[in-house]
Each structure stands twice: as structure tokens, then as C-alpha cells.
Length: 248
Image (cartoon, rainbow, N blue to C red; front, side):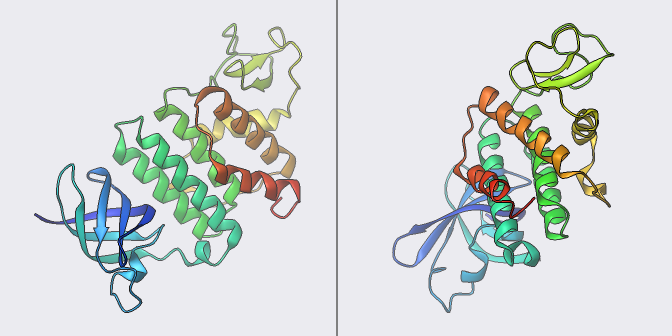
């Protein structure tokens, strides 16, 4: 059955001598496999659209629970500013792999699709990629069923005297429940809570101190390690950028 579906390529792999199999995240069907016949050939009309992060309207012969077949793609956005930057490619690749893992555990495909696409659009518009990445990471925790407690103390439920965040204690801690956790800047808690409720598509300005950005990123890294079971090599690329101060 010939179908037109909005989607984005998350992964690609070789199939035979001249073709590829694409893992395409579609808004309508979720994650599907699509064979792109002959796309490894230089002169193929499919070669340029059979790569990771191709986002557009995919014209396919759709087969439920089987490999569909690609005929063409109307590209919505080529993500030029992502693909022209090694740093932005690194962040976008990490988010692609993260979303791929989240899709295995959530049925809310359309919501995740919109969040992911809006995140890529903002990175392509040259908004801070670490901030955008952390916002999406935080939102994905809800779909994994392990979101942190950000509206009260995660131990006693107190609404006031919040002094820090703990990945091991699932979120905010008040001064009475804190033990040996390092106290963070109160702006870090403020921004972390803002991340959770923020509509990514409506971001128009990002100004944040590097220290606060790093505290949020460190918290989310520890939280993912403690609660999700998701470990991605591409996250190490981001951590390495921070260590050598290329990004921050």
C-alpha cells in the first residue's frame, strides 16, 4: 500500500551490495524499517535521503510489521547547521540514539516525535545544543517512567527549604533530608524545573551560566545511569567536549 508518512531516519545499515535498511521514526506508525533499494549507488536518487537525520515526507510502500520500501522523500529540513558542525552532529546523534531507546519502552510515539523534531530544529537554529539536549533528556524520563521529583523534597515531601538535587534520591532534597549531597546553586534547581515544563518549540532565547549548565548535565547523566539502564557511547562524546572545554 502506497503511503506518505512524516518521519526521520534514526539509523542506517547496509543491505547487500547496493541498498540500505533505514530505521525511520514516523509520526504515524512509530519506528519502522524501510529498505532503500540501490541507495548506495552514487547516481541513485535515494542516496542523498537515505542517511541519518533525513527529515521529511517519506513516500513508501508500507507493510505492517515487515520492511517497507522507499520510493522518494520530500525533505522538510536538511538540518544544514547541524550537519556542518561536528559538535552539533555529536549532540544530534546522541539524541537520535536516546530516542531510539525510549521508543522501545513507550507507546506515546507522537509526543516523542514532536519533542525530538523540535529539539533538532532548535539545535539547527544554533541554540545551545547542551541545553536543548538536557531539556529533551529530562522530558524523556517521563516516557521511561522514572521522572525525578522536582516539585517537592523527594524524601519528605516538603515544599520549602530545598537546597540540592540528588540522582540517587530521585530529585530535590530539603535541608533536613540532605546528608552528604553537594549543595547546588539555587538557579540550577530553578532551571531544572523550568526544563521540565518548557515547550521546546517556543524557545526564543537561552542565557545560562556555564556552571549551572554543567550541574544540570551532571545530574541528568547520573540520573540516567542510576535509573534507566540506558548507556550510550555517544554521550561520552559530549562529556569529552566538556572536559577539554571545546564546548563549554
